[in-house]
Image 1: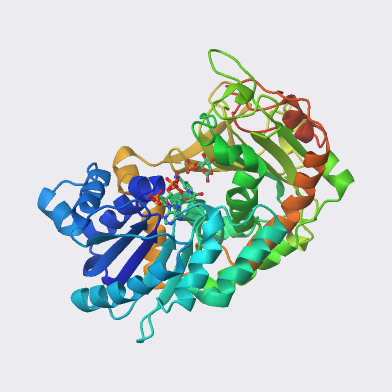
Image 2: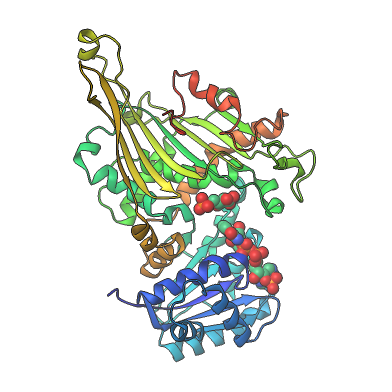
Length: 491
Ligand SMILES: NC(=O)C1=CN([C@@H]2O[C@H](COP(=O)(O)OP(=O)(O)OC[C@H]3O[C@@H](n4cnc5c(N)ncnc54)[C@H](OP(=O)(O)O)[C@@H]3O)[C@@H](O)[C@H]2O)C=CC1
Ligand SMILES: O=C1O[C@H](COP(=O)(O)O)[C@@H](O)[C@H](O)[C@H]1O
């Protein structure tokens, strides 16, 4: 049985989509597992008024598919309180402090407070400042932790400004920047696959690895999020954060230990050692795309709330290289986009082929293929290793087989959702699965010149069909190096 943690959660944006769809179900899972028990309370905050009872009803509805015991669900929901609160109104914070003290006393929370800001990013800084200035932070020996949703800025300058605002009120070790991909089971498995297996650890370098491919592809389009997405685009929405975090876990040198400070140090070194591109580099190494219409599906420019002349990117592919000796000459290809052929988050590690192929000399055609280690993240976790074997026919020929591990239904249903894992880490004060400021800063410094060049040049959009794997330029990017995307695999 896990040790229960005590805390008061203050959720700014407590009636919002994220809170109701993801955060309350995640907390309920922790409650069912005993990671939080009767010593917790959650104060939901938003402008429109609701009674505690109405709010508890919203919470009950939001956890209905996780609840197999109504009594337990109601007991959980009874820990939820609501206050109408405008985050821009300083006076509203004064009442919060008193209420927090009362809840602290009622539930014996040891003064532990978690401030979760789940609202539009323009409010992140002001909430942090007001919490500090209006003395809502606990001062009786408990912890104060600030959780910030994405996006963390829209370029380096805005991210730095936001970070300065946050750090006038909270110290770096009190800030948890959410990247929900870091809460995914198979993303967290990457360091174990690499450093927990000597046979993999030993070959994880440019001597053996030809290239690494990272794909975050979605079947869905922009849906109803054009207001945000059309001002962001795939580069900001998916590359600066999720893709870079996955790539960093793949590229980092072995941390001194797996405690959060050591993991962060290894990640920071990796991010700061990417080869940052100038304009020529961007032109050569990054391509963008936007989906057009096709097979009954609307073009991006015809989606609700998208301007008809939008040049926003719904697809990005790029080639990333490092200054690290481990990766000399080994490119990392990344790709992400909407309205693609499949929902697939995966890593394909393509190994070098043995140049001294003794079989080719003796037995005619060279049918050996490269070894490929695939780490499957979504929709189903798994690992596949492509290896060469002798086929079963007369004579001596080779074929490839896949050594496959795919989570079965039972295992998949046990896997905690990302927000459940991340809440667990926040309660335990573990920063391993959260981005530190230097990581965020380096990622923005990498992405900014790409975005700048794209903002200054006219793309030829739309340039890919829904249901494809993006524009032709994405394939050409790899073809230039004599490579091709491994996924979807040719069978
Ligand atoms: N929804 C999602 O799937 C995802 C969301 N995110 C991030 O999570 C955050 C929240 O997103 P989401 O839940 O979708 O947003 P919503 O628009 O659904 O919710 C916003 C919440 O903030 C409240 N709010 C708005 N203005 C104020 C104010 N001035 N003072 C107090 N409360 C206010 C709203 O209630 P009221 O209007 O009553 O004040 C509502 O509860 C964003 O940073 C987003 O980028 C990240 C990944 C996925
Ligand atoms: O952060 C985001 O992620 C989702 C994709 O997340 P996933 O867990 O379903 O892979 C993406 O659709 C969204 O645009 C982006 O903001």
